Structure formats: structure tokens, C-alpha cells
Image (tube, rainbow, N blue to C red; front, side, top):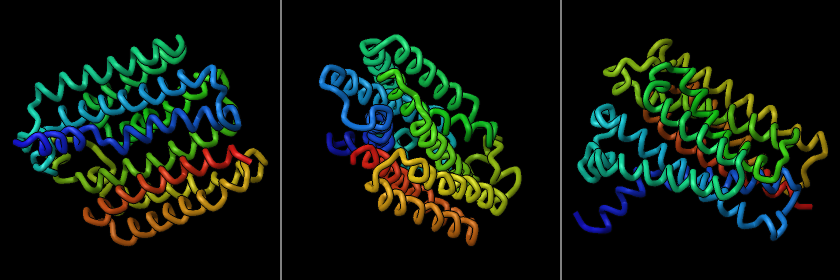
Length: 286
């Protein structure tokens, strides 16, 4: 295997977009909590926060692939571990190293941040080892992990207000819809391991309807920051893109809850969530 192929395998296993979004979420949470750019005297803590968000997420992504290597051999045999590009041992060592980097970065930030980082890493491992088999409760665990970077950012500047809580709620709802949608994609492999996703227990159509409820619930919360006067108008055009995207995702998955459609919706929702993240950051500037 060439160095380029190996690098692509490592990038695929850590899912750099997800990692970047987690690190960015910490920065956005700081912007939201402080209503603008942080002061220079805490900028190094913000950068450490990005490192923590990125590396803890990367670690949890690798743990996910390590534990799911047999399921992935059915659902997606091209994944780095079942394809042989990365060995299980290499993956486990990398997951531990990245997790430790994140914890050390959080320890250099503050005690509350250290506690949150350890709790998030632990929750991610518990989910991958056990929680994912529980279906909806596991989906909620993942969404909690996705929400943690925003809590972390608030803790970093010692401020967790209504505006930040609104964003946490929207991210939690949208991601729960995405996790349920992923269950539709992974039915074949999940059946072999007894994973009780909504798609398996209640059927793909039922799962699609529940996913759409979560997407629409996130959309329903999006006007509140404007109505409460806690964002600038820069928030509006970007959040409209996110809202339209999530509504379209809801319609698509309900109309045709197949594996191919669910896979497409899952990927696009990640983009809409990223734009929503940028919308909240933009809304902190007048």
C-alpha cells in the first residue's frame, strides 16, 4: 500500500469533517457565549478547545470502526479496517493516542473542561461498546456527544446562556434525526448483530417518519434566536439554507425510505448542520 493510500485510509477512519465540526463547535460556542470574538488572553484556551474537540471526536470515530469492523464487512467492506488498509491493533492504538491528546489539551484549559472532556470520551466509548445496540437510546447518546463541544465552549468562558442552549437543542434534534436515518442505511449489517434500531424494530418507513420529526423540530426552533433578539441579521440567510435543507431531507426520507435515499440524506444533513453552525457564529457579529 502506498503512503497516499494509507493516508486516505486514516483520513477516512477519523472522518475529518466530523472532527473539524466538533473543534469548530467549541469555537462557535465561545463566540455565542461572548457575543463576538474572545479576548486575546484566552485565545490559547480556545485553540486548545479546538484540539480537544477534534481529537476526542477522531478517537471516538476510530473506536466506532474498531468495534463495528465485522458489521462494516457486510455494510461497507471498503471501510479501512475490513479492507485491510488499517489493522485493528493500529486503529486501537491511534484511538488511545488521540483521546489522550484531547484530554491533555483539556487539562491545560481548565478543570471543568477536563471533566467534560473525560465524560465525553467515556460516553463515546460506552456508546460504541454497548449503546449503539439499544436503538433510539443509542441515537440520543450520540446526539449528546455531538452537543458536548458546545457545552465545553460555554464552560471554557464560564458562560452557558439561553442562546447557547437553543443552539445545543437544535444540534441535538438534527443529529438525532441523522442517527435514525443512518439506521435505515445500516439495516443489513445491524440485523446480523442484533442492533435494535428503529428501522429494524419498527421498519424503515416508521424510522423515516420519526427522523423527519426530529429534523422539523430543529427547524421549528431556528426562529427563536431572532424573535428573542439575541442574533444579528447575518444569522438569517444562513439558517434559512439549513432549514430548507432539513425540510427537504424530511420530505425525501419520508417519501422514499430506502437505503440509497437514506445514505444521501445522511450526508447532506451533515452539510446543513455545518451551515447552521456557521449561521450561529455569524449571528454573533453585528
